[in-house]
Every structure is written in structure tokens, then in C-alpha cells.
Amino acid sequence: MDFAFGIERHRRDLRPVLALLFAMAGLGAGIVAFLPRRVHLAILEILLPAEAAVRRLIAVAAAQMVVAPGKARAAPVGGIPRGDKSERLPCFKLFDPRKPVGSRKKRTSGKNARIRTFDEVLRPSPEKPPLSPDDPVDAAALCRRLLVLREALDDIPKHAKRLARMLARKRTKFLRVMRPGRPPGHRARRRHVVDHILADCHDLALYALDVQARAGPD
Picture 1: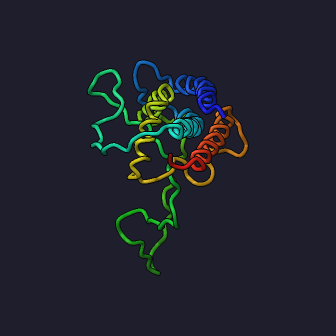
Picture 2: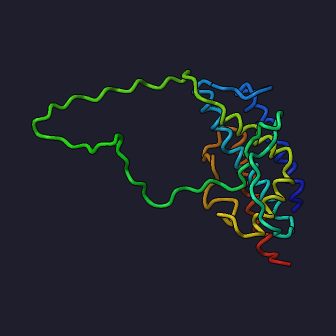
Picture 3: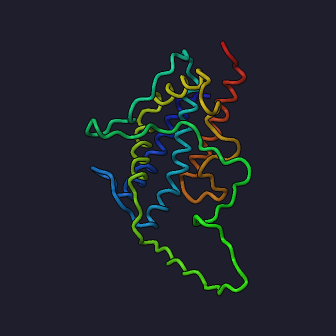
């Protein structure tokens, strides 16, 4: 299989998706401070599978590379420079977020224990006002993720080399980019074009890693 062709084809398919996300966020010269809640949620529904798709393209490219482990270097302050040298963006996350293992402990709100007595008059707790889809939501972190995703999509070989070196050192938290099971943002009923792209990228990455495993070390 021509992995380079597959990477380029899916990268080309992801560009209109990213352009749509930038248009939805109104992201132009600078980071947007606030977005309506409904817009923020709509962007997240597309952004999460788009990030997972790009992460799998990087994994495919890294599987074709043979790099020396090299020496671990201290992480630089900041990540991707943008505009002013003092303004930096974080690096693109190369590994899928893992699902929590085990049951979570239930937490009670408030510092004091909830103790009731028989002679206590119970009063209904005040109801929280319902969330409005037009409520303003902080969008700075979302905009940074969009900018980071665009940079990763524009330079997949650079991030693939970074990933290959990390895996060669075997000092990463995870030894596989993809988490077990379905990828982040997976939807069984594919409602958006990004859902189809993610499914194709996931299959491509699985096949590339299987070929790499069967080839073994040189």
C-alpha cells in the first residue's frame, strides 16, 4: 500500500473540515475570546474526530520512519510560535486521551458533611438557572486547539519524526498512539464528513502499525 498517497489524500480531505471550523469560530487575525454555547459545542463535535484523524495520519507517517532514539531533551517553554515570539501555542498532542480505569469516587459538594436531624425542617434547594444555548463561553482554549491542529495538518512529517523519536526512546507514558477500542470522537451513526474521514484514517493507521509489527526490527 502507498501510505504516502493515503496520508496526502486524507490530509486534503481534512482541509475543508478545518476551514469550516475556523469559519464557525470566526477565527481570523486573533483568538476569539467568547463564543455562544451552541457554537462552542458544535465546533467540539467536529474538532474531536478531526484531531483523532490527524493523530492517526501522523502515526502512519511515523511507522514508515527509522530514527535514532537520541537523548531526551528538556521540553521547551511553550510550543508553536505564533506572531509575537512571546506568544506560543502548545504542541499537538500525539497520543489519544485514555479513558479512566475503574470506578470513580462520588464527590459531595461543599466542605462540610451532610448531616440531617429528625427535627430539621427540609427546604428545597434552589434550582440552578437552565443553560442557554446563547450563553457566552470562554473560547480561548478552543481557538488554540484549532490553531495547533492546523499547524499539525500543515506539517505532518515534522510531527511524525517527533513521534518516532519518542517511541524509539520508549520513555513515553503510552507505547501506542491509539487507545484501545474506538477512537475519540467516534460516532456509530456518521452525521458529518469528518466521521467518514476518521474511520478511514483509523483503518489506515491500524494497517500501517500491523505492517510495522510484522516487519519487526531491521
